[in-house]
Amino acid sequence: MKNKILVGNIECISILDLELYDLDAKIDTGADSNALHCDNIFVDDENYVHFQLLDDVHPSYYDKKMKLPIYKIKKVKSSNGEVEHRPSVKVKVSFFGKEYEAVVSLTDRTNMKYPMLIGRKFLQNNFLVDVSKKYLSKQTRN
Image 1 (tube, one colour):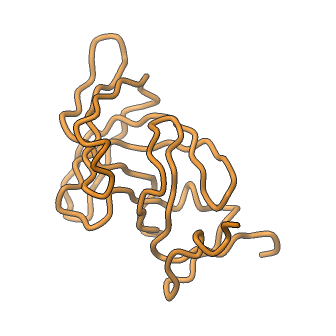
Image 2 (image 1 turned 45 degrees about the horizontal axis):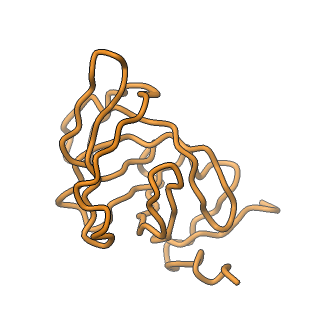
């Protein structure tokens, strides 16, 4: 338990490769992996995923078109029980002042309160979650 960083149930994360900074993210230990809200997601014949970032919190990124190599396509069962095949990408993120490599699946989270979900694979080994706290990452900034 030593050297683990305490996180709340809502935190800020920056996805450096997508130039998304201080994105609100829900910490979800029930979810296996990370997910990011995107729209117009499609995979081309050359193993790239194309998508548009849609985030009302960051209006400057609205409809920004992105293209990244696919890390993998994963079968995911959502909280409502539906199974979908989601493309995922490997990106560099900044979380609690440190940089990490993270795998993020791209999906439509329009009806979700937070544009990003952080799952247990990212959290394991480095973080402990206190669900009674929020935005502990903001307290660690200088």
